[in-house]
Length: 384
Image 1 (cartoon, helix red, strand yellow):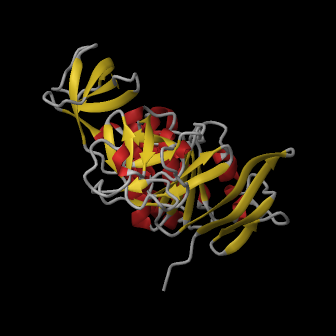
Image 2: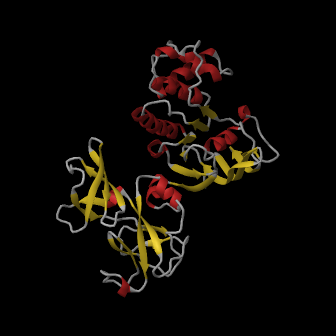
Image 3: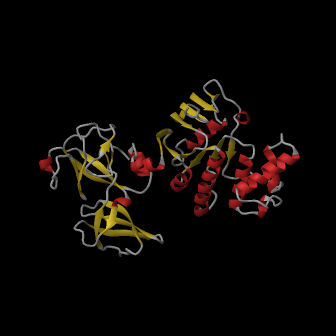
């Protein structure tokens, strides 16, 4: 028997004054699942999280928590009646209370002995055992965030909402804490929804990511699928690092230079890429073998149509003896890897990530090999 969702949104719309901020959003979360709402500032992700928490009304649609209707155009259950936890960016700890008393704040109904035992359990879960007698100003920012998490999970909620909860921490700590939190909440059977603008934090935290743009949920999917199978060019350009290069569709094989198989091609400055079943309405190709791609039905491509082809850094590897050449126009040393911006003969650019022992100077002409496992093609008329 399938598990019922802890959280379910259906066609949710939010407005500020008559301005639509969130429109037609729907997704669900089950116990133990971690998800992120990812997008730039102003995309509506925080408004949506606040609506789930009961801090914002919704104009249309439904929000169901634990199978109960909590928000609609006519209903708005108060936040304290939704039986969920909230973690904010600023930790919101009480400076005059000890760490233990901060964690115990939401446990008023328990006896003193049960409360102390639960506080000890929660501090141990977040790696702060033995620090209960200290005060917030006596611990680091990362430890303060762990206290906020311990306080949130202490009442044993089935759903936790996190509003940019790690953004005040340094990058390494933010991502490591997100990964630890995912494992912790999964072990406790707690569903979580994080709002963030940091892709790597979302990848570390989430089983599912919802990419938002101008109030719309463009795609709700696994991190892997968002990277390799984006169903929208906005997602393709936002998730990961990649550059679009121009291409031309050829259904007539005589128009493509190196086609030995009877399959349509997309011709680019990097060469010809076979794409199967081009007579269908096509959008993207997800292919472990580029000669046997599969496609969705979002777009229809015509013979000789101008298209955009997404090239990811992991599609490109160095090969000094290759006839495919590019010039180094920018580079950033990142320790184990060097990030390169490469310019092709037609002035189109690519991004590549090479192991740092492949250290090429600026303006050097280098050879490239391609390992395109997921071919992603969009109409050239789309505005990015």
